[in-house]
Amino acid sequence: MVLVLLATTGWTALQNQHAKPEPRAVALTAWQKDTLGGRPLPAADADPRAVSRFFGKLDQRRQMTLAERHPLVVGNMNGAPLPLRYRANRVALTEAVHVERVRRNDERLSETGRQDAGRRMNRFLSMLRDGRQILAFDPSGRGRAAEVFGDLGTARRVSVVVPGVDTELLTFERTQQRYSAPVGMAQALHRSERAARPGLPSATIAWADYRAPRGVGVDAATGGLAEQGAQRLNALLRALPGGSTVALMCHSYGSVLCGVAGREAPARVTDIAVAGSPGMRAEQVSELGTRARVWAMRAEHDWIADVPHLEFGGLGHGTDPVSPGFGARRLSTEGATGHTGYFRPGSGSLRNLAAIGTGDYTLTTRL
Image (cartoon, rainbow, N blue to C red):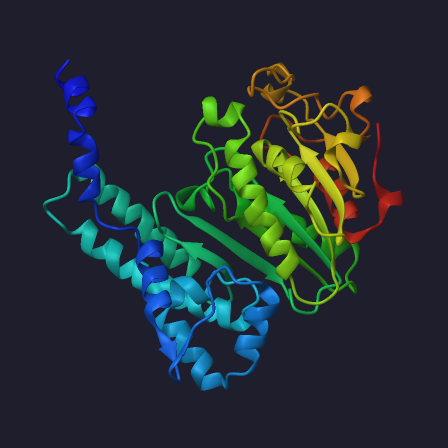
């Protein structure tokens, strides 16, 4: 009763007002107030073409000055040069390591809080390893990130791995169950594509740059977070350099996001492949509003098969994508099992995803 009274009288809201601002919010405020040569900086969410023109007029020294002064903006800015984004995110990660190291040793925090700080610090240190190309990074809240494998600037084919529930910075990569995490998924896919077509310039993105549902609850059963994520995904796709084609590889709730994104996705998206999907917010492929080929697969013993595939009152995501009536191209998953086995090396599901990624459609194994 006391808690209810406190909440209804606004006490909890007052407490939240005194919470420390998130790093990304602080960074955006600083960017908006800053100038370069007496001229204002472009909006952080400006059209990628305008952003590209802005940075194209700057020499390397000025570019680096902005990256080091505003890493959480430049590192997430669609249209900024790729090497500059990678560099800015290294700066941001280095700063985040320092913040978490201080928190880990702060005796005012609970033991759980210090342990969480240690886990975050170790995750950021891993992301700072040589050779890693971090395309997006935001430590605010549960965090968001994206990583590139291959040369995104010269790629002719780009695969984007879109993961599902419980995706955050602490689950961006895993040592155990490696291929159930975005980084492991993308690494396995990229290696499989390179093995299948060694001479094809390709790149793969582990894209965890959206707020994913936490657990199988109301957020996972509705489309709100998918709609927000779809906007972020399409913003990235429209800003990719060059003329590469794109295949979206969407797992679990990520397939809900991809279904929503398909309606506004740029024409460069030629394929949308979903694995372990609870639905794509549509009753059939024609309702997705995309010209891309739509592929669907489900592994043996994947619990998602037991989830009701329907939509009623905003709950649920529509027809089962592997059902014949949906109209997707159905694929074999030989060797894969369970909800997180689709990217396991050696599996038929991974071979099929790689064939889609490289455009070798005749090599896919269909049902």
